[in-house]
Length: 441
Image (tube, rainbow, N blue to C red; front, side, top):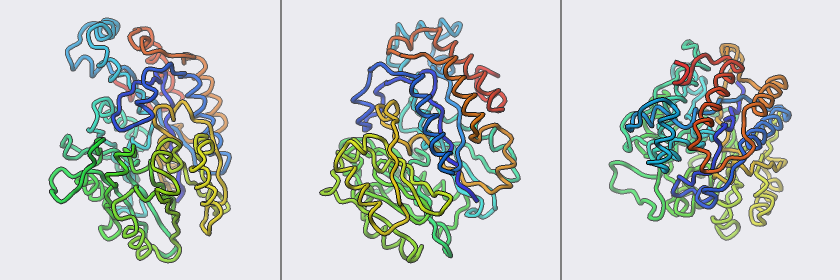
């Protein structure tokens, strides 16, 4: 079995909407000029870097934005151009919501479980419903369509519908999921959550919203047919959420036998670590940052935990961190300590993903981890696995179709939506996805 990092291709309407309470970077940069072409090429360069390390890499396509289907459902009628023009004049905030580019963070696209962990021996994926926020909830239907196209062989794959139930089963995807495993031990799945819909013994954050529910994390474990003994449901620390850790992957990241976390990532981190050692044995290692060593404000600003921790072909691990982690002294010192201690991580690579970071997403946000056997990989007929040839095709596609700069007012330009549809229609042919978008059906 091999891990593949499915990165989201940054879309043609990449913009800074400032739409997410609790996402401090998004709020800080809301309304700024964005650079869609540069952002997409930045993302492709990250994919190339990871692939050149010898790590499995693949891509997921952008979502069509603005969501004309949503605008029509909310009462705007006429041609595509008339819908966008009217929305821009009458409901500018609604146009921004339906034009959100947040789907580029595919850590929120779905939660997965590899076939070796599931009772039916299939790889399972459940698209996140993202019910906590309107602009993200719009993503689930297209994500489901895309994943069903890629993982179409039901002999090997189970792609579930997003969880029902609105806010009671609000699900934020793999940004709250960590899979850990050591030799000789069964994998453990951490399905973290920030609030409960029904329990009255839970302490909630007071400043920012908690997004994932306890009930949705339970449902994912059931859907994916995981062994209940191998599932842990740790609560995100309310103090961490209030500091800006809206998802678990802002303050914790794990890979195979290694976990890197901040003391404000979870309620009772020491108890969680003790349980993990009991389940995974001596092969489990971790590095815990105290708030004194790495203040939460610096962790949220620099995103050292929103890094990719990758297993290299030689069995060692490397961290792919954003440049902001190198530039922020407490974050850099912490990562230097990680490399110096006795654990599998031997190196840190710093990459420039500022176009994503300015919207609140680091390297880990940009990828969805999928574990596949060779047989399962062969069952995927879509052209989504990274090759130098695919890279060149995608880079050329971006340069043909993406604008250099995008301002808030440009979202009301009907030509932008038409440019996006033309680009995405071509992309589905490059990736051999078929008709996965509403405008293609």
